[in-house]
Length: 308
Image 1 (cartoon, rainbow, N blue to C red):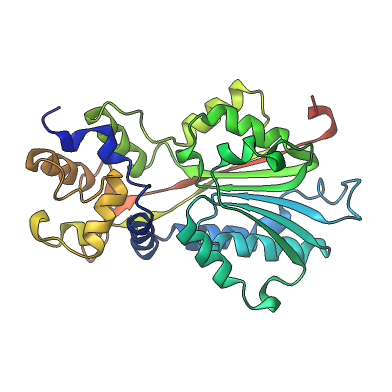
Image 2: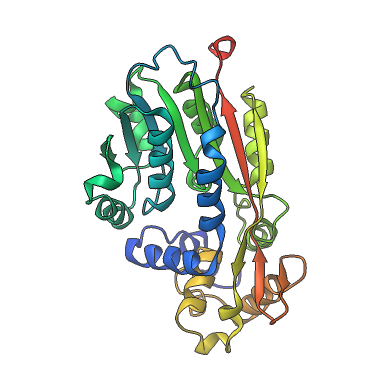
C-alpha cells in the first residue's frame, strides 16, 4: 500500500461516535432506503408471520421482540407500533444498539407515551456479540419477532450470529433480515474498495444467503426493494474543496475518517470514477447521480419441525 491512510485502521471509523452519526444522517438525507423500508413495514409487515404468529401457543401473553442495531429507531418504532396494532397485546421489546448517540435519539422519540402505548422497552447499549455473552442474551428466553435491519455488516462472525438469532426464535416466530443487494452498485463499489485495502467486501445478500444455507436455516420469502443513494453532492466540486454532505457521504461509503484528506489523490480519482460509472450508478433526467443501493429482505419463519 502506498500510504498509511490506506490501512484498515483508517477504514474502521465507527469508533468516532459523533462523526459516525453525522455520516449516517447524511446517508439518510440522500437515500430513499428508509422510506422504502418504512413503506414495507407499514404495508407488508402486517402479513409477515401470519398465520404462524397468530397460531402461537403463547398468543395469550406478551409479544417478545428483539431489535438489533436499530440506529435512531425510526424504522423500529414503525415495526413495534405495527405489531402492536396487529397483535392487540403487550409488547416486550429488547433494543440492542451499541452507539450511545443513536440510542439517545431513539429514546427521545418515544418520550410521548401515546406513540408507544402498550410497549415495554429494555435498553441494551451493546453489540450483538456483547449481548450474546450477557446473562440476558444467554437465557433460554425466546422471541416471537426479531428485527435485523441492515446490521449484518458489523458482525464479526456473521454466520454464528445469524444462527444465534434463529435459535432465539420461538415456535411460530419470525426473523426479518435486510441487507444490501449483491447486484447493487453499493456492493459493487465495496468489492472494488475492499480489493484496494485487502479487505473482504461488505456483506451483501449473496453472503447472507450462503450463511443461511450453511446453517440449514430455511428462508420463507425473499423480497427485492429498489433503493438509491443520491451522491451528486460528492461530485459538486473538486474533492479538496468538498464540504458538507458530500464529504460525509464519501466517509460513509468508504468507511474512512476524512477520506478526502486521508487518502491519496490517485486513489480518490479511482473511487470517484467507480462511483460515477454505469456499473455502480445511474443518472436521472436532471443529471443527479444515483448510486444503486437496492436492499433484499429475508423473511424466516420458525415452525415446530424446525426446532432442533
